[in-house]
Length: 354
Ligand code: COI
Image (cartoon, rainbow, N blue to C red; front, side, top):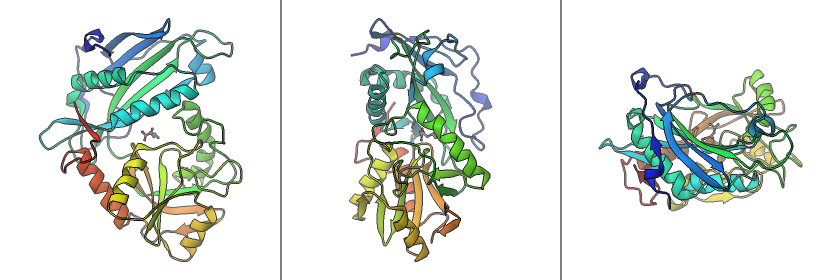
């Protein structure tokens, strides 16, 4: 068990919270006053501390810079109508961080350490948690190799940090996505399921090519045949066809999204049929051509529920019946927002009050 007394706190002498304009919060550009740091040395996490948010220094031979030994998480804190702060499903993020850690030869971050660090940091920066509709405090825990060594081997020293930033919508409008059939994000046996920095680095070139053609994002397909839908890189994807929700099963190549799980749990409870199974590209193309693709949307912490307006497939643009969000995506977005902000009862035990 981690004793919070072991977290040393150095408070900023100059808060920047007055620069926060809740009516205009771009994603990921303004960081809160403090950050949490712990170092892994001699086989244990030590020197737990909260310091003013600032640049850090690493060796030019740092193992994360050279070999991408780095993993991260994303979660959000909200304000309830009483003004209290609630974090959505932090224990699930702690568990997933450690699933990523194992794959990348990174030591486990004990859940108690993760939760204490989060709690102390959010308490200290509570004034940064916005309360306007569709805003939240985005929380970014991450761990990276800290060895000064350019040989190839698992790192022996690491740093665990948490930074936070108030955010609005990641996508401010319905997104246009392209089904990617040439490049791959992940392969069986690879790191696709892990929230590892390299997965995101490798996705940027194909995404850039798609952006040059007017798409916001890609829908990745399986690395072997490109015949099956996987995920979108910034979010998992779901379709509503013939009244059913279709989504790819999380496997070794797809991130096990926490928003994804929340959406499917609620949908099942609402009595909506959910099919978690390999989704063939052909099936979605046929549904769109036949006017049966009722809704398509991405689900993720940053993206929340992001309606997909258009899907590019080869040279064709697939039309979606409800391009700016349909009945299900609008209803689930409201339900999730109401649970996260404490407007309705959280019967799932997902929210954690700071
Ligand atoms: C998240 O949703 O938290 C992510 O990590 C996605 C990233 C594109 C911001």
